[in-house]
Length: 410
Ligand code: AMP
Ligand code: MG
Image 1 (spheres, rainbow, N blue to C red):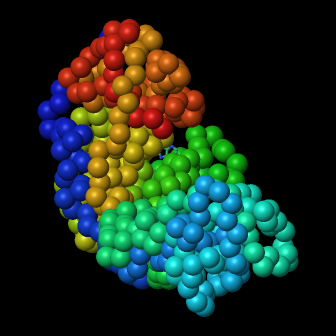
Image 2: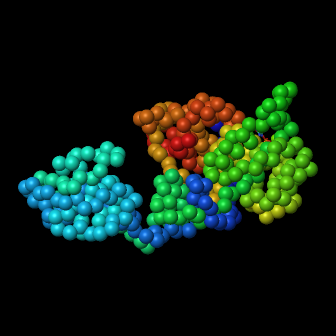
């Protein structure tokens, strides 16, 4: 059995999430060129200024005509116009008249249907072929056939995109259709990222005895960028008060929107991060009833929201997902919503210590979950192999094989 922890003066995951969200606020807004707006968060509702499509047009290459001129028997019409996409019709069709038309070209006034070229005696669509003088049709055309009426997709005045919303490719296409060249979006939050620990050396430095590479800053920077924020990497602080303070001050001088550190927040002899934060700011909480990740500090440093993640690489990753990601959503202007959970079935019994636990697992196509080996919070490879985090609620110490548990897919 794993050891049992008393949740004394540990706050719950939910309470910690709520306390963080209470203290972070959306960054400012700006108008931004459409071509660079992908993945930015829309800051104002977008209303269509015009109908889409903005004019009745043909959905086929063919002949525009008046449906009442056609019948079940053969009819020959005079071709009085040749309308390519982009053309503006000059006159309207009178009785017995037709216009050659291509896909996307405006329907001439008077016309109410398009018969495709394949269904006429002029089945020619090569480039440069002149329109015929007459065209013969052998069937009845229905009013509206092969016509895309104005306003079928969007009506002028309609809200087509509601803020806040992260802009996707199709949204940019729609904004372009509406002629919106500059989009109101939130700024991208800037997040200062620093590691702490005398054992840490850069990824390209040789490892001498007792040293390890600083891996958290790479994983966390990628998580920050993936969440739509900008990581400002400040490097590694030695385990000394002055070193930690000088990097935190650098972050504050840059007026970042949030400071994220890893390590140095537990109760070890060299864990200075908490006390440096308290000297020039304040701590809101520093322990959460979860596993991995109990030592998690939150507060503000010189007025900037500060999150001190644990140093163990799996703990840093998981606590980022649990606490920092929703905070970055709110900073980005989004309304943070609980992450979607999937129900999976345990292939084997799992044990927990009663804290809210996030266990690394592989979920197969049948929805059956198996743990990816030893769950020690330094074992990053077991996280690399996982495609899900199983969530065992606080107070639960074990779940038998074949029981259902909730999971985040990662
Ligand atoms: P600490 O919170 O400082 O006690 O660190 C907990 C564990 O995480 C220790 O084993 C550290 O060596 C490790 N650790 C701390 N920072 C990093 C980092 N940036 N990259 C990889 N491991 C780290
Ligand atoms: Mg340390």
